Image (tube, rainbow, N blue to C red; front, side, top):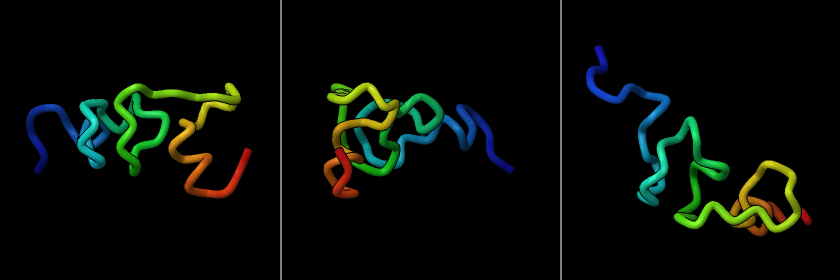
Length: 51
């Protein structure tokens, strides 16, 4: 059983943003930049080869 913040608030990438609010939950991106406003962080878009 999880206690405290809960699974959706775990910070998997260590950037200080909980997973439920992180626009790229598996890549360190504390600034939460989203250069093309698609809702995914620039760090994720860059890692996936998207634009």
